[in-house]
Image 1 (cartoon, rainbow, N blue to C red):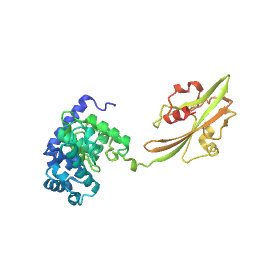
Image 2: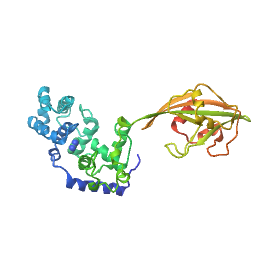
Image 3: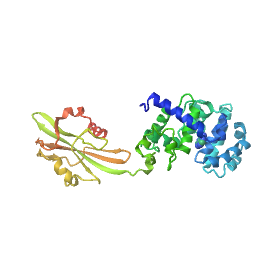
Image 4: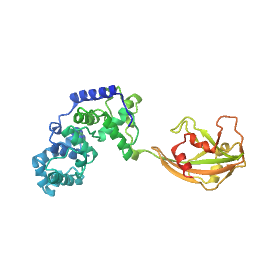
Length: 365
Ligand code: ADE
């Protein structure tokens, strides 16, 4: 895991967040208690529900079922009647099922162990961490929509928040930021900062305790973060690589070139490449402008008609379809102008760093 901020920056960040929270926190009833049942109840109610609307439900549930034993004894109709208006009724049903598991299997105590609390129906990673940290002050970062927004802006991370790998990354980063001394307060404060200050459309950066450190604030791209995969326009590109083999004096040589500035593969080596915005046949590839220059200097070029390897590669904004063609040539006369190739012994190809997708195709041969 990379370290994202220096120890001093982390300490400053935690301290300024705590100070901000002390001055700005709303007085909410689930913050005035450490009763794990009440905290869990509030978190289940607040999923997909605004705080103001959630308050009434929270009080009515606690009135009707003051303890988890009372809830476990309830019948489903009574619970769903109280849940009415919140929507997502499976949450209400899971609430009852989970209360029964707690009473039947955990002696009425909401577990403190991650492995155990995970077994409660409807209790996902956010709710697990929220209950463990708010009720027991255990060091688990609770990452809800507010926290995704705060972390992605603070650290300037455009990894999508709605993919499993993105969520894993944001949870790990939030865990690094977490104040190990006061994890419960820290989690509440991150949520509150996202809800009151680092808001989706009109963030109040001038009042934000993170403004000095915030990458998005410095770059002015707060409104573009966080990124959602569902909203990204993915363009498809077709990459046609050519492994050109030149037989000479008992060895096989091949052509590579270093990629210039401008993209994620900058500075890596690659084989001769033609990019097209649509799928292309070999004939189509050869009729493109790029291709004319591509094979300049090659004598007696013969390309095998079918790709010897193909691969799909997904990047945040691109879906790449790569083909690898095999070609033979008698000789290569290097160009004197910019952009010529390096002629290397094929056996030494592994010494040149290439994009993973090209590496994968080459090692499949
Ligand atoms: N939304 C979800 N959990 C919350 C909490 N504990 N405080 C405020 N807003 C929330």
